Amino acid sequence: MAPYIDEIFNEIPPIASSILDVGCGKGTVAALIKTMATIWPEKCYIIGIDISAYLLNFAKRYYDDVIQAHASFLPFRDKTFDAVISVEVLEHLTKREGYRMLAEIERITRKKIIITTPSHWVDMDKGLSLFDKRVRELESL
Image (cartoon, rainbow, N blue to C red; front, side):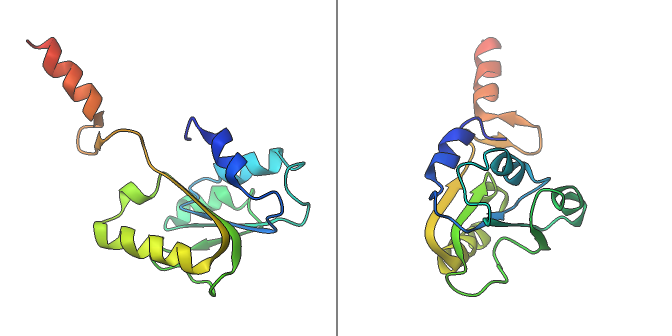
């Protein structure tokens, strides 16, 4: 989970009655929101979507509802949610899917959009960040 999670929560409007977590994974965002229940109204409805049915099995204990869907095709009406959160999902999509996800999130959000990405590149084939690669290059000199 992102080390800057407090900043993410500070961005959510305190009057939010509906929140969507795009790419919810195992449900960490909702679990944290529920532990901070004094910040949001009791009636705050939180939905998580993820492409992975496996991860949604874990997430369903934290969300009011979970839906299996791709981040670039969000099955909701326009302006459905007060806030939409997507924590470190965008970088897993193709450029086209990423643009589509951003457009979809904008379409379904009434008040606040919060999107985070990692602070450095990760080589998915080797599991090394760009920083790690540069350190190894320097060490080999």
